[in-house]
Amino acid sequence: MEHIDQVIDLLTLEEIDYCLYRGQSYKTPWNIVFGGQVLGQSLHAAYRTVPKDRILHSMHAYFILPGNCDIPIIYEVDTIRDGGSFTTRRVVAKQKGKAIFNMAASFQLDQPGLEHQITMPEVQAPEDTKSVEERLKPIKFLSPKTYKKLIGIDPNAFEFRPVTNPYALPPRNHEPYLKVWFKSIVKANVDKPMQQQLLACASDFGLLRTAALPHQTKIMMKKMLFASLDHAMWFHKDFKIDEWMLFETDSPTAGNSRGFTRGSIYNREGELIASVAQEGLMRIRS
Image (tube, rainbow, N blue to C red; front, side, top):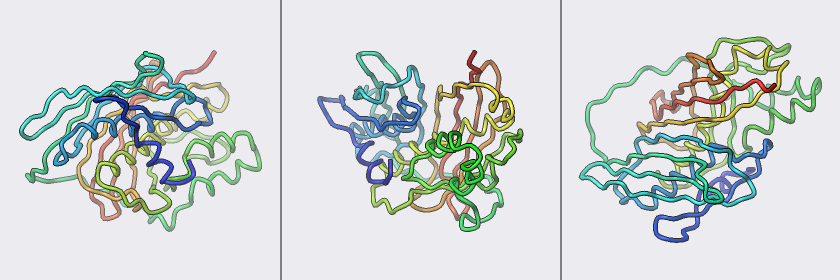
């Protein structure tokens, strides 16, 4: 995906019946549907059935089966409840009649109340931070195959700038903490629901990377399988996807071929705009 408009088009589904929508996929380097795409598309499907005065505040999703990039995805929305303040939806994504993903999402009226938040960590500004492409330059000359694999993970529609270098050579193990500035490369003049869909899509990048940091030397010597298993997200404040945001992640634990990661997303003013949690498969292939 080279341009943010392509991502928006990808997330915008075709309505084929009441509460039934169809979406396409972009071809990933790993030939399996990207989880962030399904997150964004499922939110789009849910939003199509929600009153205009309700805004998403949380979503909880499970990735059930790997998706085929060459087959359309059908999204079925269950309109579970429309309450006085909250609206609840369930979305199931299917290919060939089999569920590959399901999600529960909750939407709420704008209702001001008590407020507090933790402080954003102090980090260097995005202008003073190298992009992923710049971080990978040494690898490009030493191992073109590895470079091609790593550079293909992040979509070109978004720019990612790691505060510290997770790709340092020679490979070494790191503490499971990662801070990355990111935003869309060009302006995205879209409404709040689409802003949330784009952020959900982008939030799936890098989470498992954090869980893998303590195991870099082993990963370089083994064939690994990485895949998102679940994804939870909470939205706290308004934001703009085309302005710099800091994605701070940590991985408290890994075991039984799974890695668990948490994330906090801040705007440049230090406001916490979203929180994320994910568990992913980290399996050593025999």
